[in-house]
Image (cartoon, rainbow, N blue to C red; front, side, top):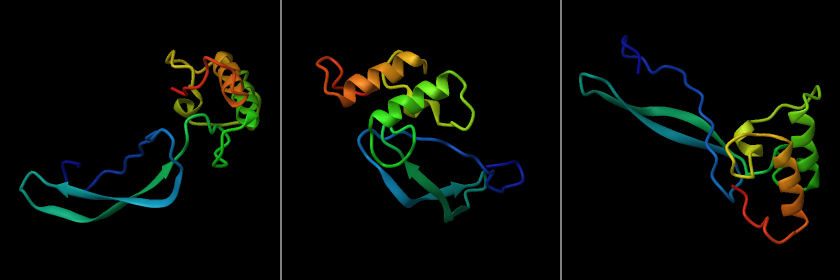
Length: 114
């Protein structure tokens, strides 16, 4: 909340593993320093599956290619990096594209998307 008592506009991306929801909203309870609260504010919520770089509600080999194109800077490919970082090393790289491809192809050792 700002010093003027108005709710500031913030954007936050949250990743919830294994879920894909669209058209949801989160109700916010904003409480001012004077104790007054406002629960009429809602924030749009989009939940994307880990690995669903193209945000088409499924994880496929296309997403592995999409991550690869994004990491090499191919024009026209934007994404939330935390969605594509599936290997668990904390950095989005071409390694994540390879990891996701192995996950989709059910290669042993690549069952978990981080």
